[in-house]
Image (cartoon, rainbow, N blue to C red; front, side):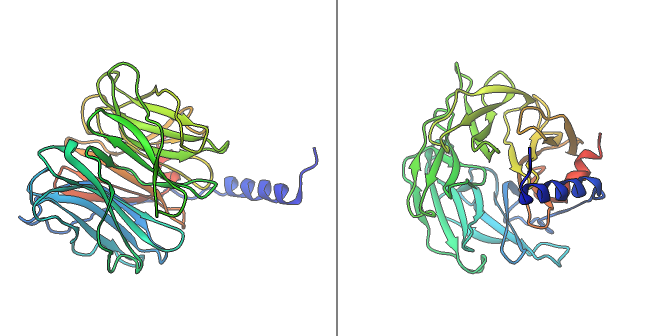
Length: 344
């Protein structure tokens, strides 16, 4: 078969890239340099890269999860800085706790924050809200209610698929089912996909999404009751309907996971590689679009809670991961794929 010039060039470039492997790279630091009585407990971070290379990280913090004083806080790290800026409040209803922030930067430079406000005593009473910034997070719009029905929550970042649609993974805390909110007009309006319902009474929440080379969408989800494994489902109509979920071989202690597709097509998953604790926190690589996850390396493996990871792939090739660090701080790790595979 005769290859086109473009295809042949792509093969040559791929071959050169494989021939010259990068050295493993890893560095990490705590996002909050000084924990104060205003926010002794921090959890559920999110991270995004801006057009100028800045990183924004957001999380919720206060006296404890669900306390009235819990707000969404955020911090910034510039490309030339070793430290994050002092935390500042990004969203706060003084009468109700906030939770589950999700940051997203669209192709036009607008930065979005999706999050929830809890109007009762538990997560089942949440409303999904959003706000945005057109100046790289310096100022923000007024808050807009994205979903008025109680109980719906985001957790992981949206993805933009091949036709330009935005897919925001969402779940229903009341019944522990997952789905996707879809925008075909850059966030001006949203529609809902069909539910992803686990067989039996197992439950699944907090989906993370990746589009595969055949155009299908892979969803991985936190489990509810047994079996103590990560769930997976597939959509072949751009997120509108989903296959009945099945379990993977990957353990899950009823904790959040997140996934990102690299520019080389590999998938990287951040998850707690256990059935009973929120440690260790592990990165796994799939080179066959989620069929297997043979390569794994722990980010954290000691006693404690290292959970709710958020993972992105920056334009310079760096993989950024933020995660809850003992419910007191948020930790940020910057690494490359070679660091993960060096554990082989």
